[in-house]
Length: 122
Image 1: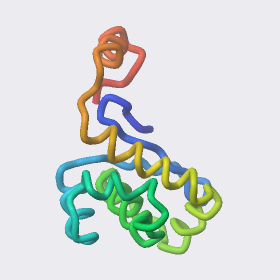
Image 2 (image 1 turned 180 degrees about the vertical axis):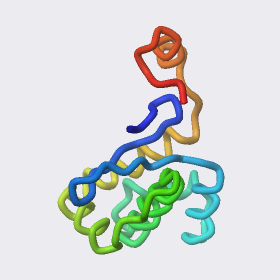
Image 3 (image 1 turned 60 degrees about the vertical axis):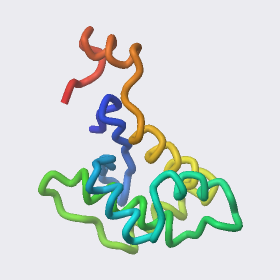
């Protein structure tokens, strides 16, 4: 289960829920594999002239790897299939939210909800 205070996102692949975790190592790996900084990648996502399906795959795969906690990585074709089923527009939004939410801290309302027990703290 994803934790919104950590800016985690969930993606169901072949009936199993995977958590994408936006860690520094995750973002560093995305930057390395795509050859540009994470904010430049974020700005490229809504631009059809600069965004590629390969970049979306890198973002999703690195996010899943960061959130595995010892679980097995899904087969690459299953990840691709889940992204295709989501559709390119929603996949772009999903990846943009993952990066954007992962580069900012939780807002005051999210912290208050966690203190009240509405959101898991870990």
